[in-house]
Image (cartoon, rainbow, N blue to C red; front, side, top):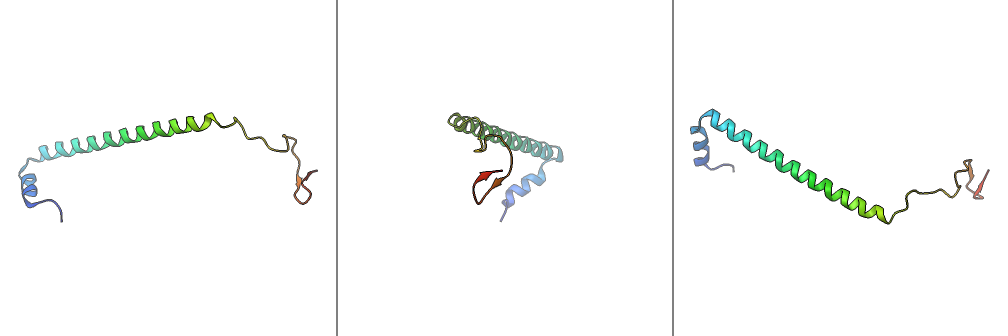
Length: 79
């Protein structure tokens, strides 16, 4: 499987400069398409993160209230 014989013959008949130009153009199109898809993906991610953050509290607070110290797990008390 692969390219048809006619396509292979046409490409061999082209001048090297023309082949190189076509290759560079194809690479540029691919990079542009990838960059566009990536920016769209980032925009969607930012949009969903902003929507998710609206209902969330600003910060998670611990039950200890910032007092520090170790917790006795068996009794659930702060020492």
